[in-house]
Length: 188
DNA sequence: GGGCCGATTAGG
DNA sequence: CTAATCGGCCCG
Image (cartoon, rainbow, N blue to C red):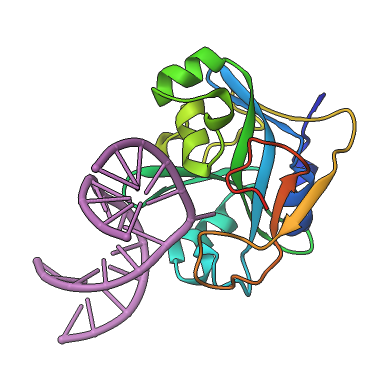
């Protein structure tokens, strides 16, 4: 397990989303293996925030690759993305599910419920379990203390499907899951 | 300023 | 199936 380099986020956003499967994400005493992601492209993707929001476009131009893009959805759920920039396609990778690894008791405390496999099997569940909020918007996990972002020793088998929970560009095959993992949000 | 909508979740 | 709950966007 090696820490991800800045260059990991300096390439095609869709490729990056696929390669994040199997990587470890950690924050504030908790960590998990990334088992589900989705890619959103800064250009030409109606489902990406950059399509409508000036603020999102500004975020892309202002920040370095690897920076966290955290936003509030439905007025109550924080969703965690990583900025990909400087490669073929700029964009974001939404982290949608983790397999809990470390600090499981702390996760349960923060979530106040759940079987281990339901602690992080959704984009808003995992931010709650890892203690990620709007305070972490625009922070850089690659250089800020308390964060872990690391690569697995071996490559993992992934499954590709269309993105879920959106109403625009529903046919893009930009959702990635770890093959056979039970901690994904909605199994294919 | 008002109305609408959403990359979701838990509970009935 | 729906309520919860609020920032950003589009009007006007």
